Image (cartoon, rainbow, N blue to C red; front, top):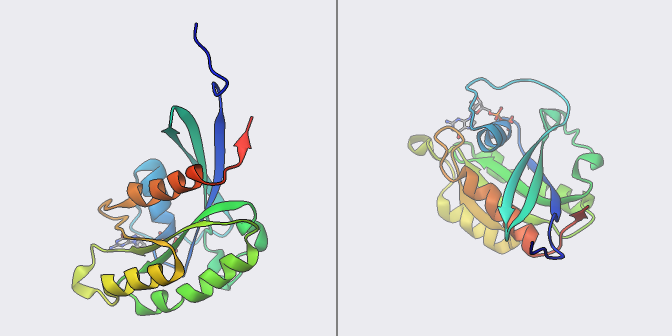
Length: 182
Ligand code: GDP
């Protein structure tokens, strides 16, 4: 039987989701990890994460994706939340301008607390709400470009680009620095 040195290699990456309250962070995660959507925001406090496995180059790549689970309501996202993160989805709601205006603050916080280069994606969620759009696609793109981030508009409600957004970040991490787990 043919066996290579790479056999059995596994990778584990931590990814965090940040952004203002109610932009859809929890729903993006449950849509990606469980293909579920919840209409009513839950007020659970405390960090939660879910793990999703991808196969890249024949290797098992696990993304441990963390959700603030309401901590941001009290501006209480701790440094432990960010610790060890290799990727981040920084989310705003395209129908609420204030959530886009908060993005620089979230980027600062991420920079302050992260201890490595983080693959970052700016996510304009709720793109199904086109009729009440308050932030243009161009504005999102241009902010992402100026910050050197990926950019995507998503809808956790109708699944638009959700898998894509997570997978671009996971592949980017895999392609650059990665933490190897035996
Ligand atoms: P979080 O506080 O950032 O985790 O936001 P949640 O995931 O709890 O979502 C907040 C509210 O926005 C909930 O009522 C969701 O049903 C709603 N929501 C989340 N994602 C979308 C989306 O893509 N489109 C629409 N129309 N509503 C969404």
